[in-house]
Amino acid sequence: MQLDLSALSAREAYTWMTDLITPRPIAWVSTTDAQGRANLAPFSFFNGVTSVPPTLLFVPVNLRDGVKKDTVLNLEAVPECVVHIVPHALGEQMNACAARLPHGESEFAAFGIETAPSTLVRPPRIAAAPAAFECRVRQIVGVGEGAMAAHVVICDILRVHVRDDILNDKGAVDAAKLDAIGRLGGEDYATTRDRFQLARPDRKR
View 1 (cartoon, rainbow, N blue to C red):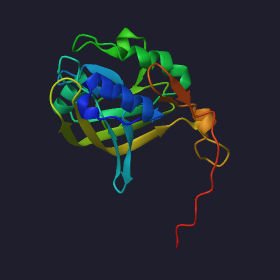
View 2: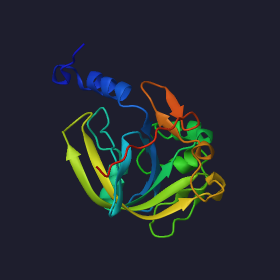
View 3: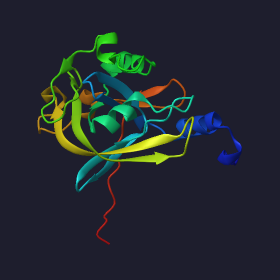
View 4: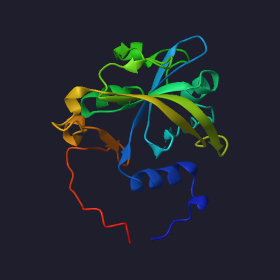
């Protein structure tokens, strides 16, 4: 089977991409608007960029009417955010935050998500998140126009918060304790509890 994505609708192309590009880590991103009102939204196009300097990216896709998501609008006004890792225990609340609320209405309040203050940026953190990255926006890159187009948000990581209870006895992250979830196709998710190891090849050659 071969697919010419240019011949498909945007929704069909999106479905094929999200069914095949899996598992995708989820960035649960808090922002604030110019009035200081907090927003919280999940994005499954998310990954690290480089450690020199420490950076990550996530990709808000425009709404079906072509309007930018509140996260992008907020970042254009206040270029700071907190990117959280989503554990299985918070999956339901994360999913609820995908609902479209009126601009300025906080998902923290709407879905009973407790906040904690950040140290270097204005948006609040999710108190129960196992890990959170306080970030400053480096660049927002628009890709396409209208419905299903997107904005690649590239951020500098300023500070990382890691809960002690997800670490092993050597002080490193234990994937089972982190219990992060990732997005598969449709409504399916995976967790970091099931895993296997492969030794890295010698790259000195």
